[in-house]
Every structure is written in structure tokens, then in C-alpha cells.
Image (cartoon, rainbow, N blue to C red; front, side, top):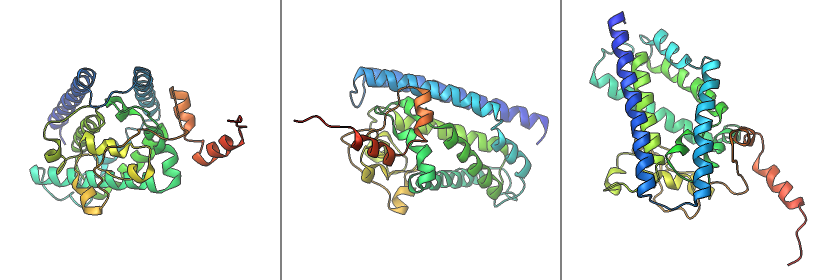
Length: 273
């Protein structure tokens, strides 16, 4: 890639990121004016403050740890992998996007399946509210493990570093969109192709039988293909016996298992009814 292409790619990705941030602000405004579901104001304020703080702190930590490795790996291995020999163009872009989205779907399934990954991913599910900022509620170790996974994937497919950044930003937009507490016109039709708030709301149900579903980030067809799609309205959002009202509690939550919480809960004396 020459200097002109590099500068052009950087400008394009900065523009995409700017649009994503504008989308965040717009979704926040829509949520405030016409929310799909009314949450107590206390829950919303705690959720929004904790989630945005987590987003900022996580980004500082990832910057310090130089977690831009995904971009660096893509630069080094762009000519290798499955798509390395394909010329840049719409076909390569669409294939790379689809494969990337499938890879994140599989990672998401694994995060719910394996206890070691779930202990970090459950932080995302601990939000008692459901709003656009919930898309930022991740444990930093969850993000770091995902970056390692993505680096392996990038080597396998072999695509341009700026294409990977573009895909990441588009995925960020969809993450904010499907976490938004909004009503979407013709959502039933849109959800046949894309993950929408109604599908992802089910994914944040308190019941594990319900939240182990709808793992897609952008495309909803992966859930249909692999039989993980569920269409229902969850009664409660969040996780039982698990709460975190600030970043420190959120970070510590990964090191406290539900089994330990239940054991502690059972040891607390109960008053006579």
C-alpha cells in the first residue's frame, strides 16, 4: 500500500468512526424520547454512567497495552490467507465482511459455552438495563481475548488492514444499534437479514435458556443456519444475584462465579416469616 492509499484509507476510517459516534448520539436521543421499554431512572443512570466509564477506561488500557495488534497483523499478512490472492474490490470486501461476521458469531457462542470465557463475557450481560451504552459494557480481558482471536482470523483470511478497520467500525455501529432501547419500523422484516434490537433483547434475558440465543452481530442468518435464533420478549433483563454499579465492581465481577455467590447467599441467615 502506498502513502496515498494509506492516507485515503485512514481518512475513510476516521469518517466511518465519526458516523458511528453520530449514530450513538442519535440513538441516545431516540431512546430518551420514545423508548421501547421503560426502565427506572435509577437503573438507566447507573447503567449509562457505568457503561460509558467502562468504555473510556477499557480504551485507555487497550492503548497502553498496544492492542492495535489487529491492525498491525493485518498489515503484515494482507497478502496471505484465503483472500490474499484476490484483487481488492466489492467481491473481496463482501466475502471478508461475511467471514468476519461469522467468526465473531462463533466467538460469541464460545463465550457463552465455555466457563473460562463466560466469566468475562457475563460482565456484558450484568446490565440490569438495556440501552445503546450496553454495547460498551465489556470486561477488558474479554476484549483482549477477542483481539487475539481476531488476529488469528485475520491471518487466515488475509485482507487489507484498512478493510479490517472498516469492518470493525461497521460492526460497532450494529452493536450500538441492536442494543438500543428503541422500536424499529418493520423490524420483523429487517430481522430476517440483520440482528435488530428485538432479537438482541432476547439475548439479554435473565433466563439462560433465553439468553443463549441470537448470537449474531450483523447478519441474523447465522442464528437461523445454526438453530440459535429465538423470537420472544424477555420478562427481565440482566443476571440474577449479579450487580455492578461502577467500573471497579464490573472488573471484579469476572473473578466471582455464580456458584460462589449462591453459596454465600445460602449461608446468610433468613429471618422467620
